[in-house]
Picture (cartoon, rainbow, N blue to C red):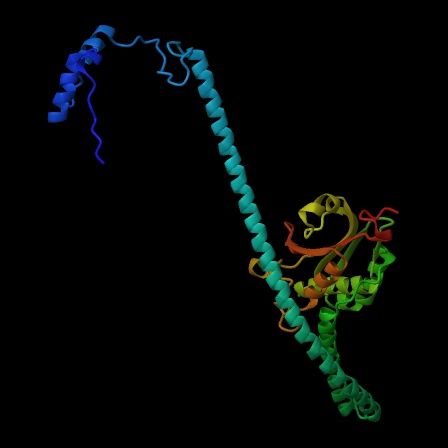
Length: 356
């Protein structure tokens, strides 16, 4: 079926020149406008300077002028919005970078804890096997010592063997303390009394290495912690400081109450952690300080700069701190030497602030 289009009669077209132009355009595709449009454009002339843009959507706005002040206000508002969006974008980018860094740090900490768990299982097995073998050997060595009491040469050899077993037993105890994952048996303790007991216990060792000790404990400083575990942590910190002062030096120990924050607290717990009262034990030495490459891995197990030792002393301190819900830090001080700080939250009566 075919359709034909019948052109309108010439009488319906007001301008016959337009018809001729359309016909000519169909033949030659001319780009010139029809002559009648040229004439109309010349009659109208250029648009006035005060005319507005051709508002096609609202006939009521056509022909109205734009106030320069209104236009400036619109541009200012646009610039303000643009600046606000730019600041928001920068803030979001900063937040994303911060969260990315935190996630990376958490992933590294998780990987480290997994490695520590594997090492702990292995060390625990080895330590128990070695200790089981040491017990009968020490018994036999004691019997041998009594039998050779009247023989100086043999007795001297027995003493050296006993010293070797004592060193081995110390290593085994370090491994067991490192792998021992028990809950602290918290008791209300006087910090000054515990510190005095620790210094009395290792006093001969300090005097043998020509170490001058200075202590400062706030009056009435009391905390709730496991005295056996904290004693072990303090002894490890003090012995570590003594090892750093091979030619003698000054050891400074301070204990005070500190309004601290658990560095592992989640964002939702930040407000509570910020007001947590902690007992802070600081041990500072006058040694050469900690090398930057060592500082990053200082609390990793089996890391040591000494010729002997297991490298578990500081790892044990960290585990004791974490079992109490606290943490331990290490830094070089401006006066020289290194300073370790043990932070133990006060858990008396289950209060986050330690208030009774």
